Amino acid sequence: MNKAELIDAIAGNSGLSKADAKRALDGFISAATGALKKNDRISLVGFGSFSVSKRAARNGRNPKTGAVIKIAAKKTIRFKAGTDLSSSVN
Image (tube, rainbow, N blue to C red; front, side, top):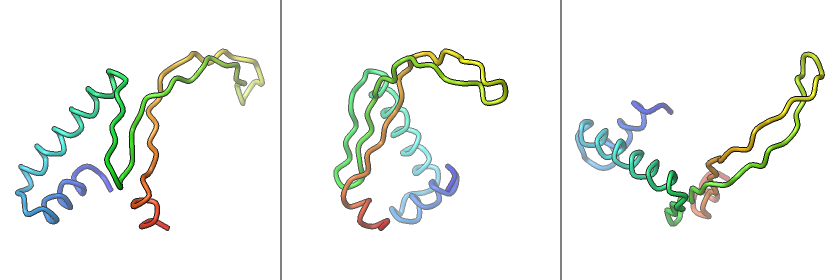
């Protein structure tokens, strides 16, 4: 599902217009991005939670040459599915 399909689904399920659904989705993305930039955790009960974690620097290998390369440390976004979401998928 891409963004346009998600907007259509939100509009269909909520009774909002597509324009309102797009603004709602854009608002959620903006708020979530801002919260994650501040290292806050976003928890949506039943759906799941988003959090920021740190990945340490490490050594890797170039698969073509086999040479050792350094992979820099960075922050990553993690998503942990909630129980309702997990049970509905399984």
